[in-house]
Image 1 (tube, rainbow, N blue to C red):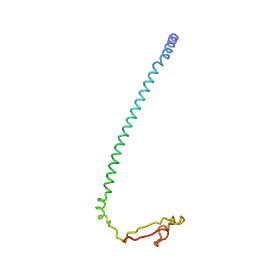
Image 2 (cartoon, helix red, strand yellow):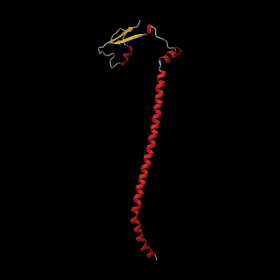
Image 3 (tube, one colour):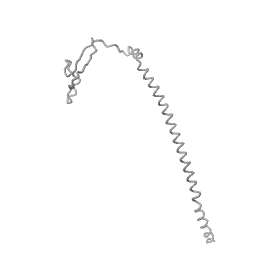
Image 4 (cartoon, rainbow, N blue to C red):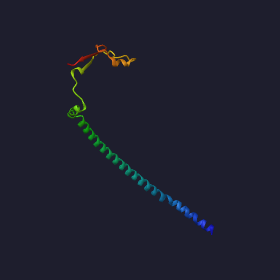
Length: 132
């Protein structure tokens, strides 16, 4: 009996293998199309999420710019200055520094410490005026 079943199963197997591409190819095409659609939907969802976050961040930036403008308003600064101990400088505290147009270096590159100790006599192209 085994030879009878073996002889009949081979033609059936060959017929099934011949018909396999007719089933497998459409399945692969449909599976690929479904996968591509799912990827597109996922990308659309990601793009909408990023767009929403961008919109929220722009609103936050606009709010912060308005807050910065409010905090930098001179009326607010002038109102807070006395509370912080800030006062108008007196005339003796104001010094005007003018640099002459000649390209004389203020200090030598070997000794940059000298920049802090500029001579007050107007040397090295620097002139000090006291405001009156």
